[in-house]
Image (cartoon, rainbow, N blue to C red; front, side):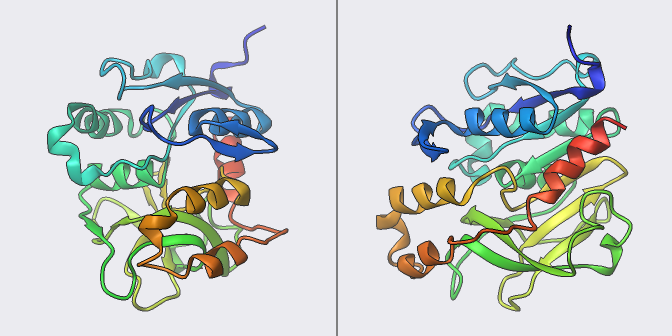
Length: 252
């Protein structure tokens, strides 16, 4: 028997076919496969949508209880050359307020752009953010459904070269970096039911370990790769709770 509509989640996959498979619990999986498994474990019934492959492949808002937009190695700096990216941003604006929306990493950036934030590339002392980095809650996060129960300061799992650099009157910033040189907006909420998380609550540390190794030639001039890999040896994680909270929010 199909689950109630509020438990059906549309996962919008933004990864290209050329994106490398990743190790997940002993098997190689795509990002969309990993994300689908994680969503099922939270009691949701995911459907996969790939507008990168078919620009018309966006969810029917009348047939889903929520939307999750996943990560990608692609950059939204290139959206003027990619009609599907522009349509994704338009779709986010249409979905806002109708069903809960959660953007993760690339998805977080797409949601932020939809609400007026500006995207930048890391440079200078911070060339990228890979592995665990410390984030701190804002005062406005206290009553937030996804972030409010998190520790005041916690480590989150990242893998990104672009970041949302500017605030917008259309959303509330929930998390920032504790690094004063890192100006990335790490989490925000627009309205009552649209969120962006720059980090990856859906990834295991093994997934990011594979990403680091696959991109080592790119990362070597930017970060201490050995230190990043060493930092992935974590057992307890506080950064996975927001994804679970989103699933609970959908099923209320």
